[in-house]
Image 1 (cartoon, rainbow, N blue to C red):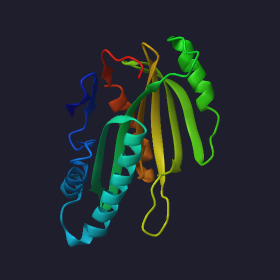
Image 2 (tube, helix red, strand yellow):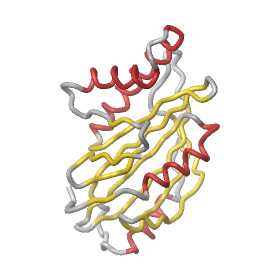
Image 3 (tube, rainbow, N blue to C red):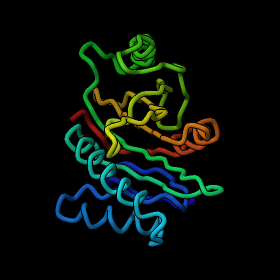
Length: 205
């Protein structure tokens, strides 16, 4: 595994096969094309998969940047001829009003996250003790937020960590994978990656 920085104050240890997202609009399109070619090669057989991957990454990153994502990384590979993919995005948002900066904030988050939302199949909500701080961990399945050329929205499994930070900030670290048959081992990998997050000197946005 190798350490990468998404922000001067945010660090996460990524597996060597993961690649950082480019959030610079001037270079993002080229970076996505290169990233997909590096992950999936140039064989003609995989051209439809590469085309779909490029389109999906552009849609997802555009929406994530609008919502305030500042860090992201992804992996795309093949296992026994089947595509495997996963991604992580990190956001920094203000805590809800009335937050106290204590463990009570996490307790309230756990209660709030336990309420199902439309289009989401809630699988698990529990506390998680990370080095960066006590967090609420949510696991769920939902639509990917992007459609295939056939107009189908594939399901993804998500694992999200909600971590209150000093000064009224909330760090949201969102992992996802469309590879549902590997969701259990990938979920364990997401937990391991979340356990390496460090932050320094942030205030609420």
